[in-house]
Amino acid sequence: MEAIAKYAHYLETELQKLDFPATPGNLYDPLRYFMTLGGKRIRPMLTLLGAELFGTAGEKAIHAALSVEIFHNFSLIHDDIMDEAPLRRKQPTVHTRWNNNVAILSGDVLLVKAYQEICKQATEVLPELMQVFNQTAVEVCEGQQHDMDFEKESTVSIPAYIEMIRLKTSVLLGCALQMGAIVAGASTADQQLIYEFGQHIGIAFQIQDDILDLYADPEKFGKQVGGDVIANKKTLLLLKAFEMADEQQSAKLNHLLTVQNTTEKIIGVRTIFDEIGVQAAARKIMDKHTALAMEALAAIDVHEEKKQPLLELSDFLLVREF
Image 1 (cartoon, rainbow, N blue to C red):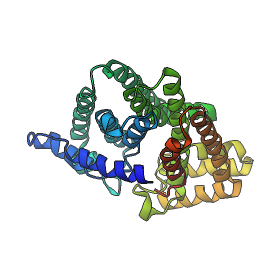
Image 2 (image 1 turned 90 degrees about the vertical axis):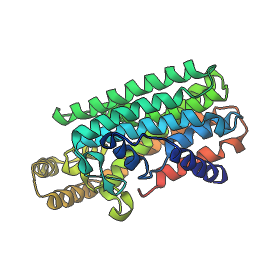
Image 3 (image 1 turned 60 degrees about the vertical axis):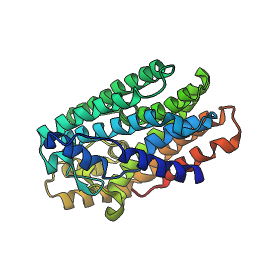
């Protein structure tokens, strides 16, 4: 964990250097607030480790790494508005503390800041970095739209759900790693392999997030436990439940989706999930994508010792409690 600890400290130091103007306060104060709430900083860490994997000091990819983190935070601010989420990292979301309009505009500025940061990378790699970053930014928006569309659709297939989380969540992890590889001058083939590693880890990561949303310790999770259930979100757990449920269980689930009492709803849904064995079924899909990620990483022809930080980070992501 030595490389991870070193880069974690380095990233926090560099993030603290982000400079937001004093005025207008209602535009920049929310960004100062949100960017200091913490977070796992997984995505920028992946960019630094992606560069190091291919023989380049992670510090040389710092601007690409910061751009990924800034973009991620922009997407969180806007997602929280769309999800009407009250908490993020155990603190009030931007739209809750200020209002929706402030959160939208502040998020917009943060997106521009992401582009300003990536443009600080060396000019010889900038076109390739921008191509990957722009494609990913579009895909993240597509994933969010699919997620919102699913709220209005009566049935959603599990493959459609996996594709949605691939776009909404995992492509940014793949992008983060690939940008580090680009800075390091990795071959196109190795860039694709490290991207695939990140993409499948990202899918597994999101499935773990779906599980934690209902089963996490509230003190550790940082968000409202059961938030997906309250919002009737079609997570992998709910889709698997309807796929595996008998007629009586399906009827109970459908009734619970109409219940307004949040405590009754969360307890009822979790009870049915436990009866059916939904958590184990979701973990089986999660394990499949973890295995695909490991296959991609194994195919990269670098010394195994250089892969160790990525393996350690993957272990953390997939066994976390928050």
